[in-house]
Length: 329
Image 1 (cartoon, rainbow, N blue to C red):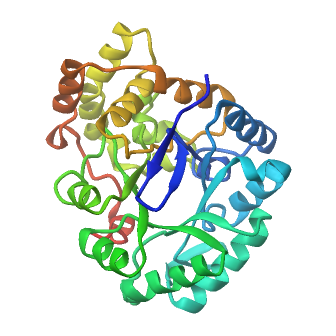
Image 2 (image 1 turned 60 degrees about the vertical axis):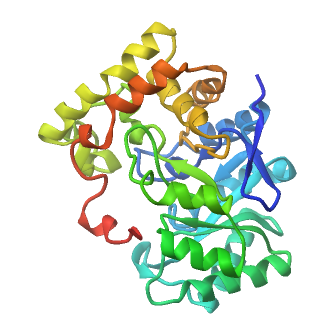
């Protein structure tokens, strides 16, 4: 199958209905495997999964470099999204910096690493409370006019900053964690995105793996795996969340599908302006994820999923305190 496309925002950005989160190819979920990662990127293009998500901080820097090496003459076949906004020193995040000078430095470096002359979608990775959003949006708008960037996005931004940015330069997409597993956007952010005609790019649409059903307790993951420190994988939270996700597994069984495919199908059904970006570094999982676009959920199944994984049914915060402090809520 070849994926259909969807529009993000009202400015003309069209992307594959499911994207590919590339972060895990370089960090967070066990050791890297460059050969398999490159093969996965090439297979994604074959399947029409051409919306590729990276960031300067992934690695840091090595993920963009990987895409630059992997794409080569295939660059024109994909939409590349990358992000700026963190201070990085000696390979570690030391804070946020979205000053105009830093934005320009970040874009210049990303273009070099990605081996391209433009970034299709440029996100501010996290809101920088030291720099007015109007200044950030104005700087990205200048980069759009210069041809270095095509479209502007925000990541984990709250309602006030979305409105401030959009008033200066149109925001095509907001990327935030959203899934059956994490519904924090529904009360305020999603209505504003609909009002302003901004697309939603849900990251971690599989609950960092929890909704695939192939999960273990935090302590069973290696030290370099993000899930080892995920509060929802720990202790009593883990037990409660396994129980909450049973409905996903039940519906998957009834459709001879994988639980992760049901989680993606739920997102695709929610709105035609949602484009999930499940992350993987393996061709087999990529193919499973793309096949989710062929699964149809009826209203009763959507209702059952909505209720089983309602916000009060999920146990534990989605991040630890340090990472939550960077989320603009």
